[in-house]
Image (cartoon, rainbow, N blue to C red; front, top):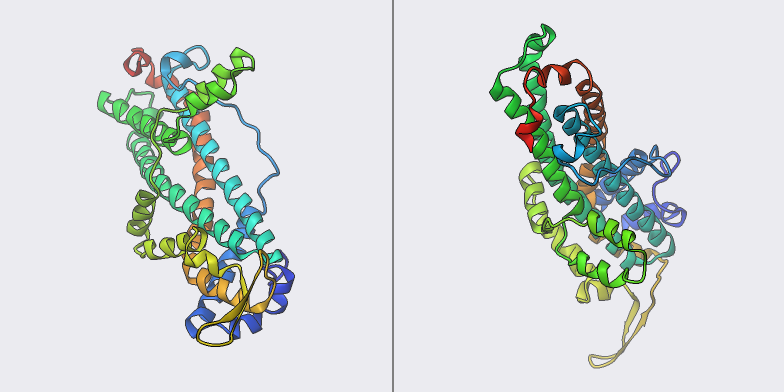
Amino acid sequence: MSGDTVFPEWIEDGYEGIRSNLSPAGAKSVDRFRVQYGRLIQELQPLPAQVEMYEIYQITPKKLQGFFPDAFSALAHCCEYMVGYWFYRHVYKIKSYVDGLNYSLDSGNWLLACTCLRNIFEEVAHFDLYLSRIDRTASKITQLEKNEAKRIRQGKRPPEKWIKDYIKCDLEIIQNLEKAIQGSDFDWRSWLQRCLVDTRAESVELEILKHSESRKTHINDCIASMEKTHKKNFFPHYDLLSDMVHPNFGSNTLVIITREKFTDMFGRVSMAGSIKNQEAACWFFEIASDTMTEPLSIASRNISIVKSLYGAFQSRAVRSSSAIGQLLTSPRSDSKRLN
């Protein structure tokens, strides 16, 4: 994207014509949509082509004792890993959907474009729900550290309740993100056992190990949370997008090029999978603009927030291996408390 160019070239070249053929509300909405879509693309541009990070399969203090000096350090590093994995998983999925949307707009594949928009909508809603939880818990950690900062600098051990609250916050983050990352209602264990039966046994065990028993988070719960957080109605927009991708009236309209009525009984219709003309673009933007403007804005905002949040968790993981970790685990062994 360069300058004011956001959409593929053929849409940008005809943008004023598309805009002038929309309803008055649609014309305003498409401008807002274009701005927010451009901002999201800009937010994703610094994303590296790939990221490599360590995975931790057994997130329990007992399993981690051999790798970290104490339970507090183990939990802090696990939180760092979980936040990082959750963040990158999200932005790479968003990037994939945006790439798909750009391709579909360029080729005039409006059904694929609406499918990509609905996927973006669901991904944003799911991430927003868990961000609200993680951000709330991270604020508790910050406040706890602030409350005891002076005592810790003086080398004094915090009260027992403070230590328990501190541990509880880490466990809340780990449990929430485990569900966010791995939650599913599909029986992956049985499927993997069937599909990988001819491979090496250790490969089967490794894949099953990654499978979580956590239930999925229903998209309606995510949208309800997004409505509560951002004080806007999102369910009507999601219902519209769903009709545009399911085998219903909405999706049928996306493959119609033209209709010609002969009489009250007969006419002619032209259909195609890709329709690269202004009329089809107008119909798409009339549907998509108001529906997606706010979710795109939330997507950009959340990516920016989690970049900072991840940095804070990385810094805390480093600190936990130094003075604060030693202080919290001496003179008593608190790792036993977490088992």
